[in-house]
Length: 231
Image (tube, rainbow, N blue to C red):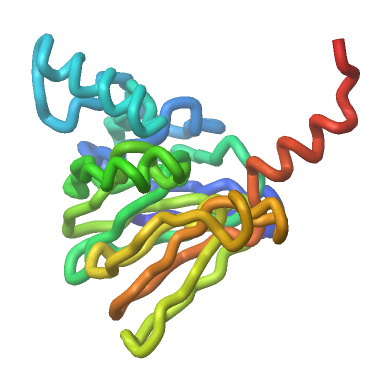
């Protein structure tokens, strides 16, 4: 995937350059503009399943994980076509290489991927899924080879684990992590974090990488809510 990011550090867009016949998958509603001849088609996010089974699969994942019921495919019909895309929330856009290492993604971080990149939904432990917002009952696990574009609210930071000690991260700051890592979703210190101001956290163990976003979208929404008139 040949792409270019705009210079903005607050609200960038990704311009993806396509050759004739090249296809990419994008999050519905992410398209900003098109140049050239590009066919944009929406279809059920059924992960390869067809018919009623595909519809039920897409609906089930949408309800249990917050994943979009539909996904869009952009196909170029001439060389040099461009499609510009952007996430709903302002912040960083960056690429992950899929192949030697596969990734698990939090909800609402997927932006675009090459056609050959696929994913499946991995069920989480019920207790963790009920406590956390990281994917609900399921998380997305990629397979490749190829590239995937993901987004972060605010900026992005990468944490490397060498297996010597775990790391604890606020659940709402996790974007993506190596599928080789073990993790647990748990309540922070205090009664649901009432004493510390923290809520649900992820504790990661093993060797691998974790990408986090520097801002918490849920906390930001709560902050904005204090300024809105109450009915």
